[in-house]
Structure formats: C-alpha cells, structure tokens
Length: 107
Picture (tube, rainbow, N blue to C red):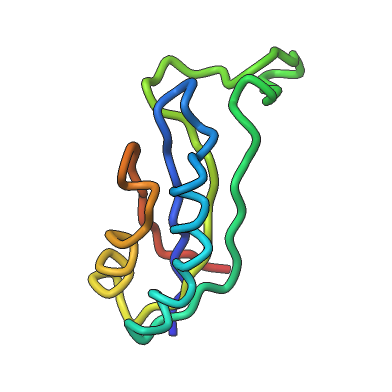
C-alpha cells in the first residue's frame, strides 16, 4: 500500500496537546487499523518556540514563518489511495483545534 504523511498543524502557541488529545492520539493507530490502514510511525514535536530555523547559513530562534498554525507533529500511514488516507486523517485528534495535511510519500 502507498505511504502518506499526515502533517499535524496546531495554532501557534497551542502546540502542546491537552491530556484528552494525547489520550486520543494514543488510540489513533487502532482507529487506522480498523479502517484497513496502518500507522507506520508518529511523532509529536516540542512547541515552535523551541525550534531553530537555518536559512542561507543564518540561524534564528523559533519558526521563521508568518502563519497562524505551525507543524506540531507528523505520522506516516499506509492507505489504499489518497481518498482512504484522507478518511483516516479526518479521525486524527489534531483536527479538533488545528489541521492535518495529507501528502503521498515517495522514495
């Protein structure tokens, strides 16, 4: 099955999930499996304030972006096709406060 990246975006300043959201994320792999997919891996990230950005050899603190949302985590899933991956991504608890971007991966 093809692999898809689910890129989890959270409102800037609210990247740390609540206990309820963490519990829901723990149950996400089981939900993916129940839909005929598989979570290959998944990781959350520390808040964007802990990030460093390197551009043209210069390092700056934090994300270098003017956005209302920042990347807060990601996971890789196996799904039959893009529509299947989107159906799975809709279940991700990150959609409660933020968004999930779905992209097919290739090597």
